[in-house]
Image (tube, rainbow, N blue to C red; front, side):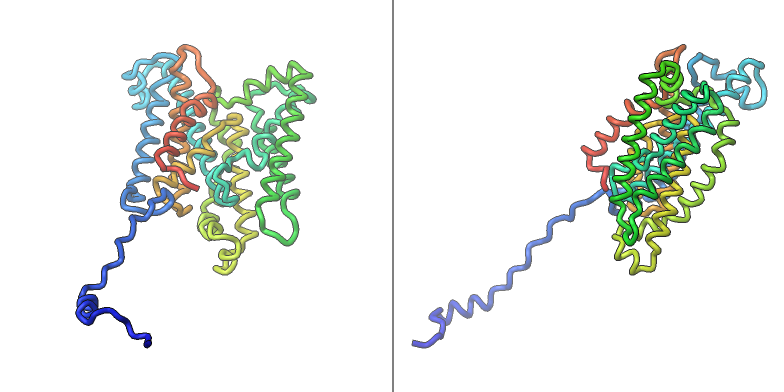
Length: 366
């Protein structure tokens, strides 16, 4: 018995004559929000729309407030006319608008950088101890130096935030490794210790609680150009560093080994990124108090609009962060007229449902 096939000759010929079946068509690739696909708007279009949204938010901030004002009168003031009282109102709104835009942009950019450098989708300015450091400094000044709030808050909160991040960085930077895990853990530990200290102080000293509770929620009430001038150098330096490290963040996203192979100085890029995020978040927190959600949500929304390139994400974050904070501030001023809410409350109530909706729609990615 041989190994020859027993298939009839005719059947073999027909089998060989039949065409080879084609491979099944590959399934459509899963479209992830972090990848460029045909459904996303062109990047320049997304930036123009974000800029338009910011313009609308700025106009709303100038025309609307806790007190009803005549829209025609506000327009006449903007053109250089109008009565004196309305001029003062519009001037106060102008300072509030400029400071709010700067703070929103800074918080969004800081959150973007922290998420990029730690590769943590839950990264936000408080991750490295910025918020807890600023809060602890304010509480300490109130308890031991008789500080009662006001314009001088920025000179107390800013050094406190910077000092906290320096401690976190020194504790979370073990020799011989570029891992960000120790840094994140150090930030969590320092934040926990500082918040425990804050709670102890406000529970044992009523005067500390009265002063601290107005600052800790975050508000643009009483905004002035003087406050912006005080934090302006930190904001500008942080923004400059953010622009310089954006290309490096793209390579860090590939992993430390790949980034090093591509010629990126991982340690330098990571240190510069942390410094940029710290300066931006510390200045914003010192100016208006801790404002949650902007630094967490805006980077996710930006990635859904312009993709994963940090060189495009940075300008989009600046525009959307400013627009989101100003829009929240307008709502805070008009929702309970003639009173107003803290803008930090509105950012959470408006932003959280929107972010959840974006997650459900698949717009948010890591």
